[in-house]
Image (cartoon, rainbow, N blue to C red; front, side, top):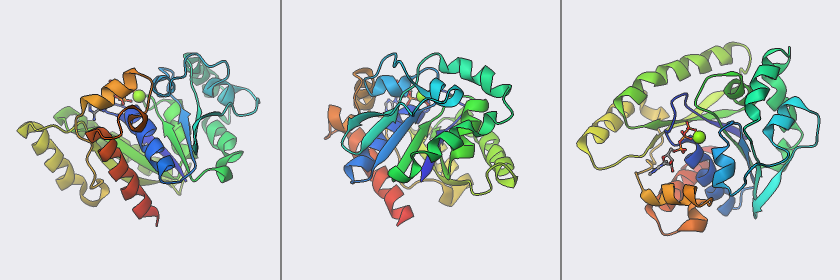
Length: 246
Ligand SMILES: Nc1ncnc2c1ncn2[C@@H]1O[C@H](COP(=O)(O)OP(=O)(O)OP(=O)(O)O)[C@@H](O)[C@H]1O
Ligand SMILES: [Mg+2]
């Protein structure tokens, strides 16, 4: 199962979700591969990897073996580096540019239960590669008014992709992130549920500073502090995802 974590809006929790949902699934005995498809390389940094020699740029633009690094039991990553931004230009001038990631992941797909792709905050050819390679999409959405307004763009894009380029694509769920106790954010979260109903995960990721601390120290939340609220939320999300696929 290949799942993209997307939203063209920045800072909504895509990377935090990719690493921590991935780790939570690995702790449930699933074999997980993370793919960093963001030139900012935040996912790789969260996993404690800096400036990898071989990374997603080479995966997309060269025919080298996939540079998979093992982080923990059942938990692997293909890291990124800043040079991934150059891949965008190269892919745009390649007739098969939209299908590169799909083609490359086929090589290892059978070895993993879940492949999670962390997308950059854009709708460029990189996230399009991710969406074309994916079976499902998780839309990370902050409980903020402006964040909600942009969501329709993603739904429209997914509908377009389903017509032709990836007919099997579907939404696994919309994930409300960084929820806190302010009435405003609760109201926004409620209105997201009203509009998108059953497409929203039951699990909500609360605002939890420990998640940000784990990120900053290059660790997943379970390694950093497994008793934190963030760890509980991402464990609950993993269980919900596993129930969906049962
Ligand atoms: N639930 C949370 N509680 C507190 N802080 C969080 C939470 N989720 C994410 N953060 C922090 O918010 C910031 C943005 O999160 P993250 O990097 O996951 O977003 P993103 O959508 O991947 O951003 P970008 O679009 O730039 O890739 C990070 O500093 C992260 O540590
Ligand atoms: Mg990110």
